[in-house]
Image (cartoon, one colour):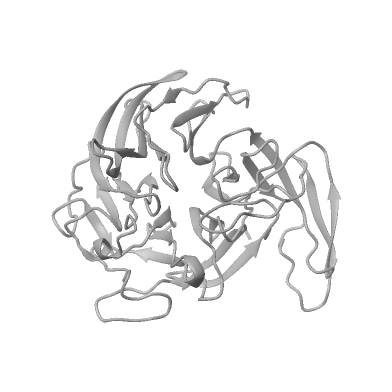
Length: 397
């Protein structure tokens, strides 16, 4: 089994059946995120700690498959971090939802001043400064791509993707590439990632208007595929920016070793929450929202590779694939989820660190092979510790 990496902030004993041995070396704390109720307080965890399972009750599956984990708090004191990206020099950029881009420098220190503050950002509900991506040819094209919520004159809420040139310690003027994506207080999507084909993939939510998801002439409730200048990528199925449709609020994107694209997506919310999804994304496909949910079927629509069921809520966020598994953050679920992949299907979904770290937003693999996770406990739905929010990395040995 390949070594994997995850992010932690807290400790727990499950019903007294699993006994954990902890070795604490330095300080740390963590959390998770998404739509729903406020989270309960969690214990502080020490960074670079080792966690060992000594024994377990027969018949129980321990929540840690490996014997130990080293944990490192990369940054703390952030305000609702949404996405991170790794600079070639070893620095880390991170978006904060109120509209700031922050830098963790090559010494591992969070710079006190933002590298950019985007004045047009409108932080409303789930909206604000969200997705972040670096140009794959960053050495010759040092561009940073950002997705954010804003208001046009008259007060209508929209989203856009912009590009800014990176210079050490600062970002230049923004150039708007994709504009007037429908927005609202909730369901703004916001994940942007370059695919192995060199094109940018953008997730958009239905902007709390479910009918838009089924309309391929609008940009809401979609996964878009565009060039690095914001034009429709060649081969797009509808002759516009739209790659797939029928989405409610997709949040995570990750490609496996075969080039297959996986996405996480929020299911219904409110009293009837649940039915969160993991989907395999294929060009031109209709993923059913709002017509079908969960295990429902309809001709011409694609059901999820896995869903949380009607009684369980993940509120899935950022996603990364490593070691044959798709790892994704849980916001309302307050856990790190591991979807074990078997070719084009999900064999099993495991839940790690339930209730220990709060709301988890970003999950991404770093250049060092570790898994990096951000908490989102200051988003108005969590219960932040004094030094939240955080970026944490974990490597299991």
